[in-house]
Amino acid sequence: MSEEQKYNLILASASPRRKELLRRGGFVYEICVSSCEEKTEETVPAKVVEALSAAKAADVYAKMHDKRQNPLILAADTVVAVDGEILGKPVDDMDAYRMLSLLSGKTHEVYTGVTLQWGEDKIHTFHEVTKVTVAELSEEEIRGYVKSGQATDKAGAYGIQTGFATYISGIEGDYNNVVGLPLAAVYHTMKELGLSVERDRRNVAADAETTSERPTRADIRKQIDPQVKQLIGFGLIFGSFLLLALLILVIWIMPGAIHGYQKAFLVLIAICVVVSTYLWISKRMK
Image (cartoon, helix red, strand yellow):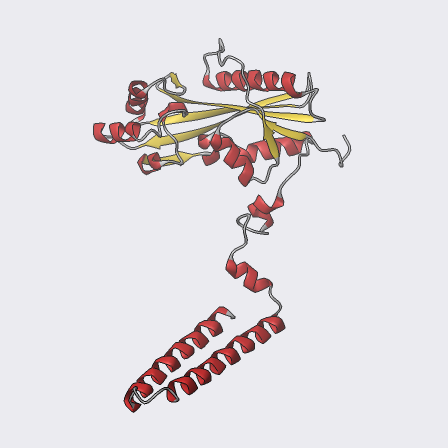
């Protein structure tokens, strides 16, 4: 593969967590959700997630290989394992309550299987595991979290990026793996395999170009040429004092209905307003 060749990254998932992780990583991608049945005969957590991610990738590759040039399918599947039981997504609130009760006061493992497929027989599958310790949860805390609605659609009935984070007392491994996608492992695996995809550098923190798509006001001020900034500052300050002079003149020539001390008071207010404006402008132009 030439260095110039790039693959079109396709995420085989509708998970908002995985989409956000890829966006933050600066990956340009499109989405094609797998419609395959998520079932496997495997019973070991690592094998389960690898098998399910591979099935998702194969399903999406079959849909997209003749629709996109150089498609690279990225599929993932996450489960939680505790006390020899594999926990997927809860089927209802009662199931979520059962899962969280199992996790309470224990250390469990979060497995995420990842499959990259860029050809009929060009497939690479791996998994990451992270250990997570949950503090002792009261019945009230469990019911409150389930009632919040944040337990649905998440392996193990919790999201570490949600309010459940307050119950996490320890983590060993990749945090993003618990969220749903071991982003660093995905990036380095693609790099080792020579799979180049389009990147949106504005979203890559390592490039230090920007921390968001919209620059802050501080960033904009830093980009203004110092001389231009000085001219703008002088112009605003001169305008402020010109305004002060005009205000004083208008107040002083007002009809006699306003006594001298009242005019002086109005002049003092005008001076305070303009001086405050001057100080604000000076500070903002630094």
